[in-house]
Image (cartoon, rainbow, N blue to C red; front, side):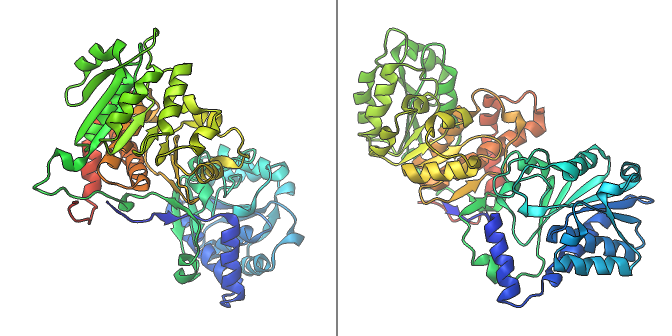
Length: 520
């Protein structure tokens, strides 16, 4: 497996330090950076400005506002009608913003106080573009007063909205919405992308995201270790297979899943593992549903295991699973298992003995929720794949701080790979780093999608991917398959089976970008 690290995402503190170093240590004037940002905003505005319309700029007193004020000055030079509305006190403008205000006034423009302008809404009706330059990445408190009113006005407008660096109201570190937030059509972010632009719900408010340089040397940004990355198409590399390979070269996958009433989940996981390239897939199910699974599975190999009176796996199924797992490269436990004291005992006992890399999903996670000691005593490499509800039950003692912070803390504290599912799934690693996925959408909000993902992760581990690469690759391809399905049959009708059927096309599209040599 070849993997290229994705685009680095920074937080507010890291961005401020980069800017401080650039101005104080490298001697780059802050006004130069601001003027370059203004030029980028001006270019974006003229690109999307309908003929015969004007531009409205909403500016705050900080440097983000200075970017907008500078853009307005440049637009005036191009004979574009523009008005600048100040949210805040002109006396609090930063020195660099004061310089931009001088440029604006020298070109015949003016800074209008939002508080005292009566015709803003009327002007917005004739505006083709709105530039949001109120607060940028520095906002960390709930919007209120004029700022909140301005956000609501912008969102009610039909104009094309361009956010300078980040939409006002989006927390740049967590992606949280601070009371309300601008719905941008385009976000022009400067120097480096920010974490909150990739995490829900903030990422939804960003629209199209463009990362542009304002003159800070790449050597400086390259040297910053953020530990957080986005996963882009060019980062996923699937090796070509050797012509002389056989099924044994692509691993043996063991899945323990299913119960009475839940026979779809094991079938979906097993089929996804096969479609993702595993050489052999074994499926252990309660003997109560074995006959059903034997009919459902053609390529996969189901076998019966002891069950309780309710048709769920019994605790004494552990010995058979451990025996078989020792002959496999990956073990998945959880999909459709149901809940019972015996399931909890089964999962806990296996985790404490097994050496095979293990993926815990669905009811496997429910079985260990509230029992943190189970993870501490694990004898195998672990990947956990919770959805938000399951994660809340697992991470009871972790302090809040947003999905990204919580995922990174949990993975590090429990020495596991955590795949926190949802829109923009986060894969967090034991070293504290995290990878935010960029594929997938609402078409995948169907039962069984998570079962398919768990099977895909197990499959890539079988194929000798590292746990990190298996998780990142599976999450990306799973989302891409969902996107391809949505494109072909629409968002409403996509099923987990459709996603699995689309895995081959997702793999082909990804392989077309691969520069890797054959595996083996």
